[in-house]
Amino acid sequence: MKNYKKIIFYLVLAALCFGCIRKIYCPSFINRDILTWYPYKQRDTLALINAQDDSVKFFYIYEYEVKHNNFYKTGYSCGGCATKIYINEDDRFRISVSIDHDENDYISESYSIGFSNFASTKCSIQDNYNFNGITISQVKIFENYNGKGRYKEMVLGKGYGILSLTDYNNKTWFISMAKAQRAPIVKPFHQKSDTAKYNYVEVGGCLP
Image 1 (cartoon, one colour):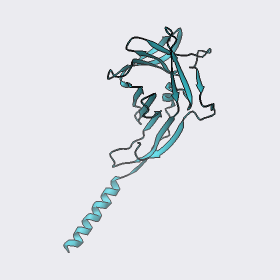
Image 2 (spheres, helix red, strand yellow; image 1 turned 90 degrees about the horizontal axis):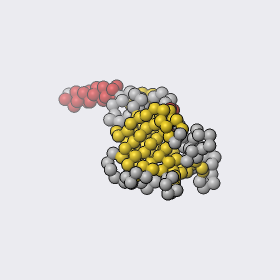
Image 3 (spheres, one colour; image 1 turned 90 degrees about the vertical axis):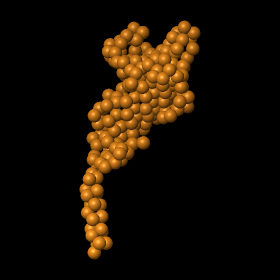
Image 4 (spheres, helix red, strand yellow; image 1 turned 120 degrees about the vertical axis):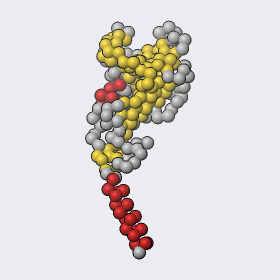
């Protein structure tokens, strides 16, 4: 009789646990305004030029991926209607960007350029920013949050991407601007320009 009661107890407990887990479907990734800050395509090359000594910094966009959670299950420690944006994920020796965006429209940003690290925790926003005679509607000015690496400041322009990098000797490299003054000059490498702007992947459960 005791064993029978135990079986009933565990069955009821299991039913209650399963009843607590629900599958929540997420809306599609609709805040594409975020992507206007990163107007790149896979296989683009960014050229930043220092006007004092004509030195050029090249950065390659070989990976651009948007991962979106289309559903998650309640009762788990992770989950939610989140989107992650990766550019050159974990490539510390060139440029790496990681953006987290959740259903509450909270955005967390982190950037690594070489060993220089920038994040939304040390960032200011300016409107109608004058960039070499061009007015840009909005920019984000990031400060190096741990003092490591070569660069102390990065300026990101809406619709333009990375505008400039400044090192600890106050040397600044600026993006080359197109004659139309609307977008940075970028060029394909490996002689391949027909690649998609970014890979869009829908996943379910927990985003990596």
